[in-house]
Length: 161
Image 1 (tube, rainbow, N blue to C red):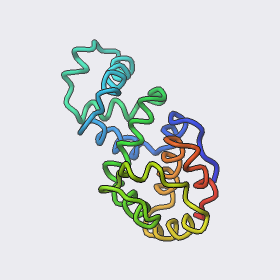
Image 2: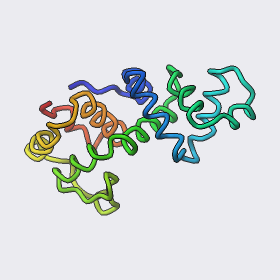
Image 3: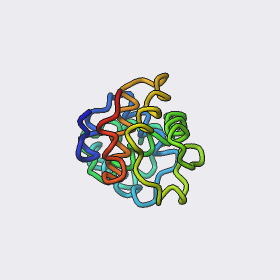
């Protein structure tokens, strides 16, 4: 599997439906550091004033962000994380459980920070545990993990999907 090397490229590969799911999840709990970027992207995409963008309902904001082809690296990364922490949390949990990494509902715990990268054997077992999930979702998740920490998750490029 060949990974995209930045979040914008991965964002562009998502289907319009997946981008909308990601954007809707983002607006449920927008990260403070990405909120201004998201509002700026809406202002630019819709050609509206910032105060109008801030007043839009969340579903309208989600549709606006989902339609942005290049939201910028930081915002694209935040949207990808939102996608997985929202609609795809079961995938995260299943993968981390199969690897034996400590997590809370799909979010790695701090004690997992020092854990070594998964071995090829453990990765193979963990990948098999994801057999009930759509291949495209698994690939997007693996690529998102890789973008967050390329050194730790480089082994995911060899995952047997």
